Amino acid sequence: MRRIVGVLMLTGMAAACTAQDMMPGPAEGEAIFAANCVACHDYRGQGATLSGGQNAPDLTGIAARRDGEFPRAEILSKIDGYGHGKVSATVMPEFGSLLEGELVPVDIDGVPTPTPRPLAALLAYLESIQVVDEG
Image (cartoon, rainbow, N blue to C red; front, side, top):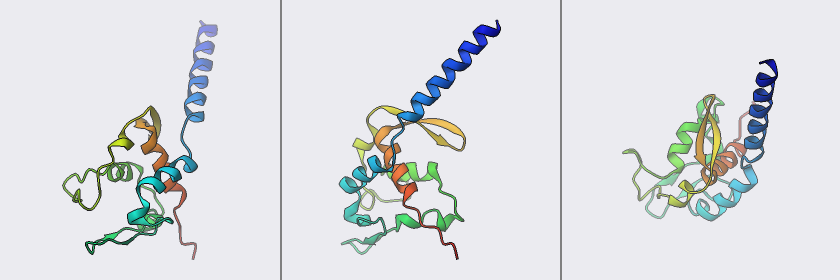
């Protein structure tokens, strides 16, 4: 019985390592950001004024505006582009292609949540560009 438990533990650890190795990094997300987001948020993610007069938010200050916490679930919800009654689709477009692709486990509040790889990559990039005031 002890041998079976040991094999199951090793199998589980190998699966976890494999999933972690397959996780997209910030560089993959940066390419997606460049292709989809720079028109509104600029190349540095610092936001801009849109032609309709609305302001695209500074994406480098998400964590700073939340006492240093990067709200992964909230950001995933906004990235998908669906207004959920709060943001007009004319302000934040729907990015259907970001909702396609293989699913990877993104840690949301300690729970591995299956997330389309492009969406997870963009999340990793946004998390990597956060500027926290050290003063």
